[in-house]
Each structure stands twice: as structure tokens, then as C-alpha cells.
Length: 95
Image (cartoon, rainbow, N blue to C red; front, side):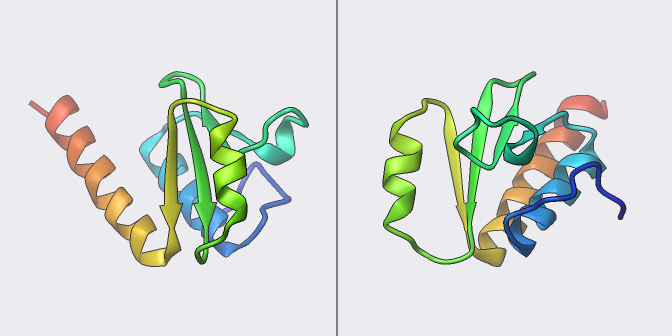
């Protein structure tokens, strides 16, 4: 998939961007906003997403500066969040 963002931190951010793009969820990536300290901001939901490939002590400092943060760790965590979000969208919008 061709992304509107060219500077992702790593492949896990690309996976999250794919999920958001495929579900039509609008987001701002940290490379688009110099003031954004977390990986993604979902303005319509007022939620931030921080993605980590592995456990890192750095995340504590990052997420402590913002409310409404979802921290996703690892590829399997991304898959589970994708399942959760997809099932929500199907339940909420397909009736």
C-alpha cells in the first residue's frame, strides 16, 4: 500500500498505518507534526497511539505526557488491536 507518510519510525508503524488507512480512520503521524511526541494522533477520536516493536523504558516518559494513549507493543499486539478495531467497526456500522 502506498502511504501518505514517507518517514515511519519502523515497520510496526507501517502496519498500524495500514490498519488505519484500510479502516478509513484519519490520523496524523509524528512526522507530519513536530509537536507530536507519540507516533499517531487520531483527531476524530482524540486518541494517541504509540507503537513499540519491543519493550522500552522510553515509553513511560512518552506516554506520561499525554492522556488518551493506546500503547501497542509488538506485531502480535498490532494484530490483536486490528481484530478488535475491525470487529468494532463491523458491529457499529454494519447493521
